[in-house]
Every structure is written in C-alpha cells, then in structure tokens.
Length: 575
Image 1: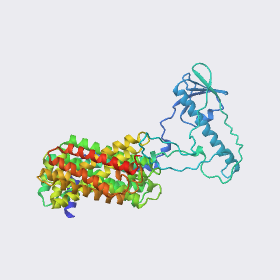
Image 2: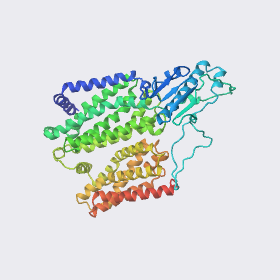
Image 3: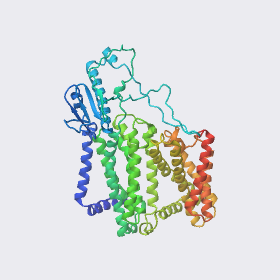
Image 4: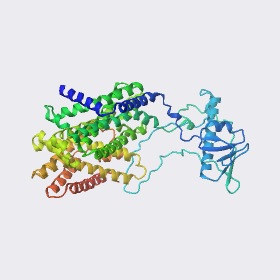
C-alpha cells in the first residue's frame, strides 16, 4: 500500500507541473457551479417555442387565453399566422397557420379545463360533472412476439383513440380558412357517477425525461474531463519514456497502475459525493456511481496503453465517450416507464434522488456488468505495464493479444488459462450486448425483424471474437490442440455467461429483445453450451489451418447465427 501511495503522490506532483493551474481552477469552478446550480434549475421554464406564432387579435374574447401561452405573440401585423375577431378566426392555408390553429385549439381546451377546476373543488359533485371521463393508467409490457409472417401490431381490445380530431375549418376565400370563435364558458350538465377513480384525460401528461438526463449529466460531466487528463498523463510518460524509470524501480505493474489511478478516482469520487449531497442523495447514490467512475477510468487507461500517438488516443477517447454516454444517458429517458431503464446506473441514481425504492436485483443488474468489465480492462492493461508494452508501437489488436498471452503465462497451465480467460471476457461481451439493447430497444416497433437480425448478428460476432482470443495466442505459439482450445474457450464462456446471467441480468431476459440477445429460448443449458463450443472450435480449427483470424471468426459467427435461428424457430419465437 505504501508503494501505491508513493506513486499516487508522484502523479499528483506531475499533474500540477504539467497542467496550467488556471486551467485546473477553471475546470474545478465550472464543475462546482454546475453541481451547485442543479437544485435551482427549473426544467419547466425551458422553452424552445416562445413567440412561435404571430397572432393578430382585435381584443376579447381570446386575448386572455393567448396571454397564457408563450407560444403566441400578439402583434398587429399583415404577416400574422392567425387573425382573430369577435366572431371568427381566420388563417391562411399554410402548414404554419394550420399548426397555429391546432395550438390555439389546444390552448383553449386547456384554459377551459383550468376554469372548470377553479370553479369546482374536487370534492364538489360539479367537478365530476365537468369531467365525466376518468382514465386509469396501466403500463403494458412492450415485449413483441416475432412471427414468421409479416408482423402486425394490433391495439388491445377495447382500446380507444388517444387524440381528438382537429377542428374542421369553414371554407372562405381560396387561400383563407375560418372557424367560429370558440366559447370559453363551459357548461357541465352530466350527472356525476359513483366510485370514480383514475385521472381526467386532460391531466394526463407523458413522462418528460429532461430532468433525469440533466441530473445524470451533473454526475457524469466531470468524468469526461478527468478521464482525459488521466489518459493524457499516461500517454505523455510513454512518449517521453519517463515511465521506464518506474518500471526499473522495485514497484510491480499493478501497484503503478493503482497509484496512477488513485488520485483521479478520488477526485471523481469527491465530485460524486458533493453532487449527491447537493441533490439530497445518500451514500447509496455514491455507491452506485463507483462502477461508472471505474468504467470511465478503465477505458481511458486502456486507450492510453493501446494508442501509438495522441491522435489515436483522441480517437479512442471520443469513441468510448460516445459509447459510454449513450449507454448511460439513453436509458434514463425511460425512468419509471420500462425495466430496461435499469441497464444504466444513472437510472438508479435518479430513482434514489426521487425517493423511490431500489431493489438489490436492480442494483446488481446495473452495477455488476460495469464493475466486472472495468476490472477486466484494468487486468488486460496491467499485463502491458512493461518496457515492451509501453514503448513498442504496434497495432492495438496485437497489443490485446500480447496482454492475453501474458495473462495465460501468469495463469500457468494452458488448459486452465484458456478456460479462465473464456470466463473473464464475458462481462465485456455482455456490456457490449447491453449497449446494443439500449440502442435498438426504442426501434423495435419500427422494424422488429430487421432490428433483431442486426443486433443478434453483431452480438454473435462479438462473442466469437472474445472466445477466439486465447486460442489464437496459443495457436500462434505453436499449440497443436486447436479443437481442445476451442472446446475449453467455449466451455469457459458458457460458465461465465450463465454465472453472470443468474447474478445480475435476470430482469432483462423476461422476453423481447433481451431474451434473444442473452438467452435464446430460456434458461437452457445443453443448447447454449453446444453453440458456444461449436463456434469456438470452428474458429480455432480454421486458424490452425492457416485461415486469417477475421475470416475464421466470420465463419464461426455465421454458424452461431444459423444455430440461434434454428433454436429460436424450434422454441416458437419465430412462429
């Protein structure tokens, strides 16, 4: 521990000398201001439609209504979208004018509803006479059944349209349409029923995710900056060859990595604690953020080890920033709407800040894949903390193979090594599959067959690449047991997959796209084992015959994909 702290102190001193103090203070103050300003933000005040439509009005009766909606700007102009008099509303036949008319109709209805609410208290029978229709909201499962015929999504029995028809204009001149000016005084006449429950349709508003995204951004924004400083520090030592001095000291590779990571981890942890305190969170919020901190730092660390220059480092950092940003932010748009939102730990952060309960299953589901993937990335990067790994400029894939080869050496017997590495790559593969789930989930209603086909093809390709790493390294070193290597790699992947599946992913595989990506037709054992072993053996044997790794993986992926389709058809998911 003393050696780790010594490396951490050296990293702090080096960062202070490399980074301009004014830049650091500016970044620190900007982040603190953003975090401290979060509780005072009024999301409802954000408006991109202010003064969108120009209205020319002679006076009552709609001037009060127009003033209540900031989309309308009252102006006596010949270019007005609508002209309102005491008896009619006149507009030109353009899309903008029709949109203004529709917006006005919506505003008038809302104004009348507000008048009724002010006129009758909720415990008054007249309130239920004014609002005779009440709706109970029930969120339905969005899992889709995939048919062999063209997919038809029909409404559930008893469903009704959710939008009213637009007002029918009365024809006037060739390019002008008019409608009567609506009355603003409502006349409720219905007899109130008994045992009313639910919500009036006018009070139903769809969930608006902007608040969730803003709160999530408060926690994640510092990670983009700090991770770049972290990777730049390691890259600078590689290029200037200053990191060789640490390698020559009696400090082990993992101690160097831990010491260099510790200051940046502490800073990000401090930001998370401050953000949680300012927003009213507790220690559990900070605990949920730890895997997020680790995944940002681990990807930055791996980028700095694999990149050959700062240009490649920038490209890798941008790639990982986009992937992680999408993975973390997109699910927060479905907070309290769908179970898939718990893919992101930021969803749990929003739930905790809102006072909602978070189950242990949800916590494991959101945290375990990120945590294991981060540890795997750090493990692979630590294997390259040597003179050859830091100074030799080779292709990134060759460095990954070098890292796997060193890990095999540390694990001892090659059979054990292949089996263990097959298990270790599972979290990284699952993380990529969860990313596919995030990207394609909201597209399922557009073209489900195409979406499922693409996501499953990419998924099996990632799996086969992960399983072939250890056999590829050993075959290049002259190992003749290619079929045994493939069998052990497939078996290891199967064991790791089922272990992580039962540990953390039980909530996402209950039908739909999640079942297709992770399980297939349920918690089967023999069939997934056969698929994984077959794919790994095909790729390993192909490489042993002299076929390039990429074509070997393509062949294994095609076989894997076809076997998945057969199993899905046999299980009834394809009709």
